[in-house]
Image 1: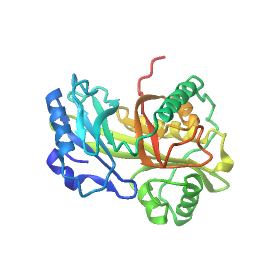
Image 2: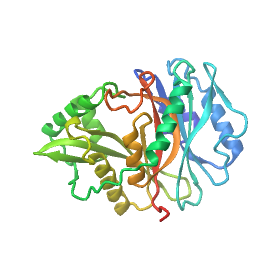
Image 3: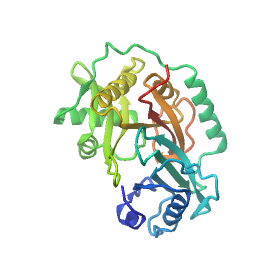
Amino acid sequence: MFGSPEEVPNGALFDETNARLKGTFTIPVLSDRDLNDRLQEVSQTTWSDLRADRITVKFLVGPGVDYRLHGEKVAWRRNAAIEFEGFVPVNGHPTVAGIAYYGAVDPRRMPPVDTEISERNLHRQALANPSWRDTSHVRCEVLTPIGNQDVCGLVDLYNQRFDRYLVRFTHETVRFMVGGSLTMVIRETGKIVSVAIAERVVFAVPGAASISFYEISDVATDTACGGRGYALALYRALIGRIRREEPNAVVTTEIRACWAPLYRIMVASGFVEGGYLPAHCLIRSVGAETIHQAGDFGDLALFFHNPNPVT
């Protein structure tokens, strides 16, 4: 997370295994010219020594900014361009209308066109048949503090569910994932069988109210417990907890574009589609793919929770 373009080289998060650079600019962009200038600076920043073939940046944008980049595209290296990929609104803020997502992908890493078409068709089909399951009987608990037994259980659970992921699941990485985040779990006979984590950051906006931003991620359910509505119950429980404590918080999640059940869960828990992130991260979960994932770098669908749904 960085506050100005000059801070990007030192503040960018680079995962060498995942070959991806990502970051967030926290000073709001208030004009089309300002946005273009910022993106040009991102494209020209000296990251040549980092062998990244995917870049992801987010900007806080003010009202009226053409965040969809209807103008000229911003070139990135390796014959790629920085493209608009998604938007998450910020409700009721005086200077920030939302968070705009941009990305560039090396053409050699991009998913095939037929894969993108299949994923978007899958999305439409899944949204037409949401999961309206009753989960009121499912007991979700906040995981705090986390003991060694639960750490071991989560390591086993994540390794069972994911063949490839952003990190290797070890005691150290799981403790880091859970530490400082809102983590909810479901147990059976004392064992954790389902988990979801809501990471929170606060964007300090100069001269205006700060913005609380939550991302729900690292969701996993034991294969033996599939079909019981546990993931939906956890999403609902996390949203309920967040809205009680911070009604105006921004809540997002990025789900696997090749897995239909997650789309249905999104509708049932009050999320709205915000964008599509191609070849976004190193991820694979064999057996949990409704359609084939092309390559190791999975496509994600961006969703945001709507605190004021139309009824």
